Length: 297
Image: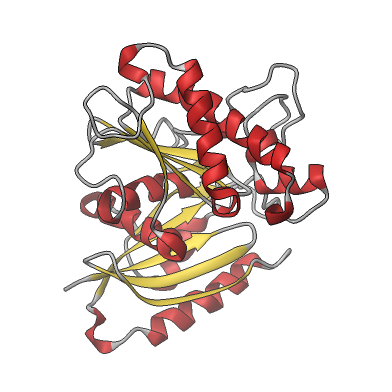
């Protein structure tokens, strides 16, 4: 059976792997993202992974690439906010030339929501949002079974929803955005500590701000499930989730958007992802899987 070449570009690490048709990662490798010369490092990584693919992994037929936004899906370029050396970088074209495969490019969070519907908590659910909380803060949304992509492919930039008017400055130039309170880099800069040593008050506040943003998204998209993923939920865990659930419940008073732990028809669930370390590569492969009939080299 065919398999997917999966590439995930993060501000702290580059990952590549081979994912089979069942969504299992059969080959994986990663390196730290260099401050400069990012493409040469990614080029070497991808070639190494392709060379390591086992004979029984199936032919590589499509490639999926996930990257922090903003992106331009029409042109195939990326301009990650936390990777300033890449501005309007022609990532889709470069990867297509390197691999010879039809290549799909999408924001990281869109890949993650497709991964949850393929292998995770979103299976058999048609209205799902994944909120990615790492250096990037962005969401992927599936509404009535359809992935929301937007004009240029950037639908779901929940990180720039205002959660605190006149609040902390954001990397986007605005103030009070969710990114300013819930991104890994913002939290570590404010506390001057590694993420896992953040004070309890910061963990609680982060959850509260996440709950505010999710309440808006739930009302706009009429969601059934919200999944939190990324470095921040990985470090803050259940405490973050509990705080976010409380804030969501306080701000979502209409019956059809009320939060709850069960699967009943009119309750919104919020959970932590269970996909673990393989989520970035499964997400990148899921982009290719979702778009395979129309993938462009």
